[in-house]
Length: 130
Image (cartoon, rainbow, N blue to C red):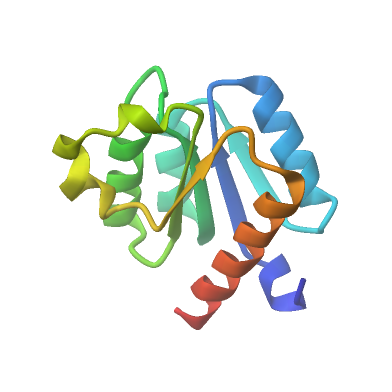
């Protein structure tokens, strides 16, 4: 990972504390600046208050769907790369088509460590090219 990408935040939003812990540790082991939360309102506050390179959100969150979260993230921080993480790809319907435009990439659970790191690295670089 380049030194430049280390200064940018990666925000992970999931209602499963185990997933937050594991993904956070994976990224921290590569010296990423990682913020994890299980609350969509806290994720949106983080986007308002600081520069976030990549946000990774679970699709099914208690307060609002991950798609709605990423739509709002796009409004708050259009440059932030938005990634949807889901174990239920069939729950994204055709009615969500316009909203899916707020998502740069979909990842299916379970995602391998290598694939997750590859996606984060590639999308951090995309953010840097901005």
